[in-house]
Image 1 (cartoon, rainbow, N blue to C red):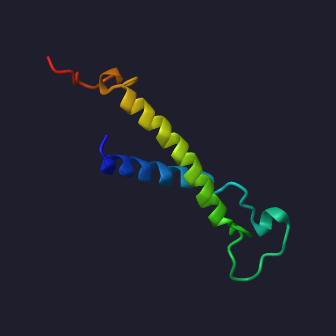
Image 2 (cartoon, rainbow, N blue to C red):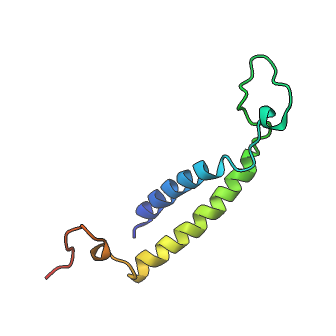
Image 3 (cartoon, rainbow, N blue to C red):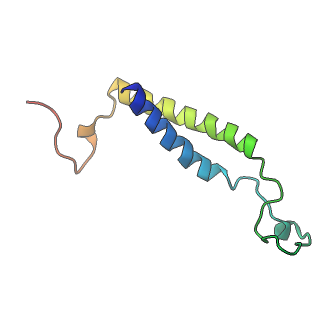
Length: 91
Protein backbone atom coordinates (compact mmCIF):
# COMPACT_ATOMS: atom_id res chain seq x y z
CA UNK A 1 0.00 0.00 0.00
CA UNK A 2 1.41 3.37 -0.95
CA UNK A 3 1.63 6.30 1.45
CA UNK A 4 -1.06 8.22 -0.44
CA UNK A 5 -3.42 5.23 -0.39
CA UNK A 6 -2.85 4.77 3.33
CA UNK A 7 -3.54 8.44 3.99
CA UNK A 8 -6.74 8.29 1.96
CA UNK A 9 -8.00 5.21 3.81
CA UNK A 10 -7.13 6.76 7.19
CA UNK A 11 -8.89 10.02 6.21
CA UNK A 12 -12.07 8.16 5.29
CA UNK A 13 -11.93 6.03 8.45
CA UNK A 14 -11.37 9.13 10.60
CA UNK A 15 -14.44 10.91 9.22
CA UNK A 16 -16.67 7.84 9.56
CA UNK A 17 -15.54 7.36 13.15
CA UNK A 18 -16.04 11.08 13.88
CA UNK A 19 -19.68 10.91 12.84
CA UNK A 20 -20.20 7.91 15.13
CA UNK A 21 -18.45 9.64 18.07
CA UNK A 22 -20.16 13.04 17.76
CA UNK A 23 -23.39 12.07 19.58
CA UNK A 24 -21.55 10.49 22.54
CA UNK A 25 -22.34 12.42 25.70
CA UNK A 26 -24.28 15.14 23.91
CA UNK A 27 -27.28 16.28 25.95
CA UNK A 28 -29.62 19.11 25.12
CA UNK A 29 -31.36 21.56 27.43
CA UNK A 30 -34.62 19.76 26.67
CA UNK A 31 -33.17 16.41 27.82
CA UNK A 32 -31.93 17.96 31.07
CA UNK A 33 -35.23 19.69 31.71
CA UNK A 34 -33.78 23.19 31.43
CA UNK A 35 -35.59 26.17 29.94
CA UNK A 36 -34.87 26.74 26.26
CA UNK A 37 -34.18 30.37 25.41
CA UNK A 38 -35.80 32.03 22.41
CA UNK A 39 -33.80 31.59 19.22
CA UNK A 40 -32.05 28.41 20.39
CA UNK A 41 -32.68 25.02 18.86
CA UNK A 42 -34.15 22.59 21.40
CA UNK A 43 -31.79 19.88 20.14
CA UNK A 44 -28.58 21.93 20.44
CA UNK A 45 -26.06 20.29 22.78
CA UNK A 46 -25.13 22.14 25.95
CA UNK A 47 -21.46 21.14 25.87
CA UNK A 48 -20.03 19.68 22.69
CA UNK A 49 -16.50 18.75 23.95
CA UNK A 50 -15.24 18.69 20.37
CA UNK A 51 -11.55 18.55 21.34
CA UNK A 52 -12.05 15.37 23.37
CA UNK A 53 -14.15 13.89 20.57
CA UNK A 54 -11.36 14.61 18.06
CA UNK A 55 -8.87 12.81 20.32
CA UNK A 56 -11.18 9.82 20.78
CA UNK A 57 -11.84 9.74 17.02
CA UNK A 58 -8.11 9.81 16.28
CA UNK A 59 -7.43 6.97 18.73
CA UNK A 60 -10.22 4.75 17.40
CA UNK A 61 -9.39 5.46 13.75
CA UNK A 62 -5.71 4.72 14.42
CA UNK A 63 -6.53 1.32 15.94
CA UNK A 64 -8.88 0.48 13.06
CA UNK A 65 -6.31 1.59 10.49
CA UNK A 66 -3.57 -0.45 12.17
CA UNK A 67 -5.79 -3.54 11.91
CA UNK A 68 -6.65 -2.75 8.30
CA UNK A 69 -2.98 -2.20 7.44
CA UNK A 70 -1.94 -5.44 9.13
CA UNK A 71 -4.56 -7.43 7.22
CA UNK A 72 -3.65 -5.82 3.90
CA UNK A 73 0.12 -6.20 4.21
CA UNK A 74 0.17 -9.76 5.55
CA UNK A 75 -2.15 -11.02 2.83
CA UNK A 76 -4.55 -12.67 5.26
CA UNK A 77 -7.41 -11.33 3.15
CA UNK A 78 -7.00 -10.58 -0.54
CA UNK A 79 -9.36 -9.34 -3.22
CA UNK A 80 -9.75 -12.95 -4.35
CA UNK A 81 -11.36 -13.74 -0.98
CA UNK A 82 -14.18 -11.24 -1.60
CA UNK A 83 -17.19 -12.98 -3.14
CA UNK A 84 -18.81 -11.65 -6.34
CA UNK A 85 -15.56 -10.11 -7.62
CA UNK A 86 -13.66 -11.41 -10.62
CA UNK A 87 -10.49 -13.38 -10.02
CA UNK A 88 -7.43 -11.12 -9.78
CA UNK A 89 -4.73 -13.80 -9.71
CA UNK A 90 -2.49 -13.86 -12.73
CA UNK A 91 -2.20 -17.15 -14.54
